Image (cartoon, rainbow, N blue to C red; front, side):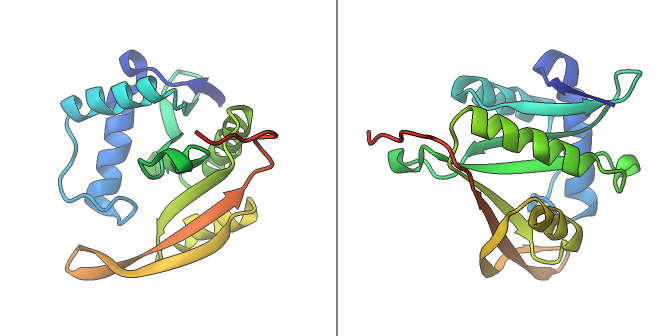
Length: 173
C-alpha cells in the first residue's frame, strides 16, 4: 500500500464508487441518492480552487483503497484555520488500518498547511469512526441530536475536533 495525491483523471471514478457505497449502505454520509460523475467534477474543482488535499491509499496494482480530504468548515473568514475532514475506505478493505493511515496523513498535511482545528462530523452510531478519531487525539465537542433522517430513523451527528499546534503566527483578515 502506498499513499498518493489523488487526481480527478486517475481517481474520480474510484472515489465516486467508495462514496456511493457509503451513501447506499451506511449513515457515514447523510445523502439519499448516489452521486454522479458530474458531482465529482465539481467536487474536485472545489478542492483544487481551495488548495485542499485529497490523499489516497493504493494497492500494488494501483487500485484506490480509500481516501481522505478536508474542506471548508464554515464559509466565514474567521474560520480560515478550521477545516472539516472526511475519510472513506473501500468496503472490502475496512478493518485493515487504512483509516488510521489516511487520517494520520491528512492530519500531517493539515499541519503542513497551517490548519489549526480539524473537525469531523460523525454519525453518533458509528463507533468505529469515533474510536479511530479518539485514538488519534480528537475529542468530542458536541452532538446535534436528530440532525438527519435516513433509513427511516433520526440520526445524531457527533462532532470531534483536534486542535493542532499550527499556525505559529496566525493573522486576522
